[in-house]
Length: 214
Image 1 (cartoon, rainbow, N blue to C red):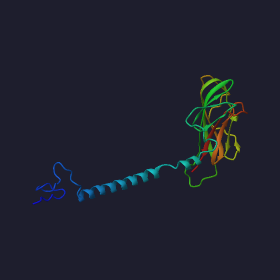
Image 2 (image 1 turned 180 degrees about the horizontal axis):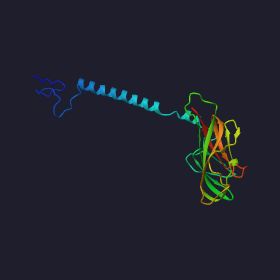
Image 3 (image 1 turned 90 degrees about the vertical axis):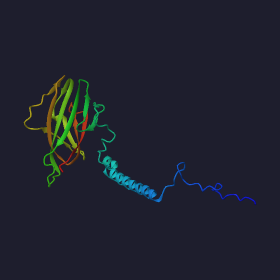
Image 4 (image 1 turned 120 degrees about the horizontal axis):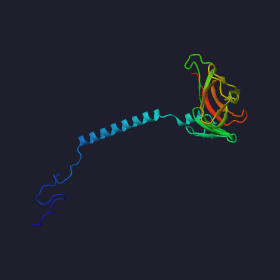
């Protein structure tokens, strides 16, 4: 008799090959369900976390739109150099190294500080107080309240005055001396610039600020 070849996968009289120690078992249904469930959970948690992160991030475009146009592009937290030929423009709280023919000085304006923040009735005008400080003086720096002025966002100029109770300002600062004093003016709410012209005419430094009473 002619011998009949065994069916595919059957070796003679041996049983069909089964997964064993040397073979890899296919994933069973419960395992697939468990893996799939964890994958869905991780995806949901990841999406939720991403949503929280993206919602908590500030809108950079909105933040940029609130920066005064004059200040955009100017570095902050850096010491700028201010001269008659090229006045420095920075924000309040940042230092300016003022250089003139007969002196150099490190100057900074802080403020304004205003009374009544958070009051339910907010007036369009408020009392503003700035602190002006000079240090690292080399040479002779002329000092006069009249050499400072403040302008609002409409270009109107205001002349600040020395806050009452302070000592009289020296007319000149000399090498090694320091000085800090406060100026005050009633200003409208909004943006403004504090400017300094040591000779009364030529501005060497400008500090941008915001008047807020809310």
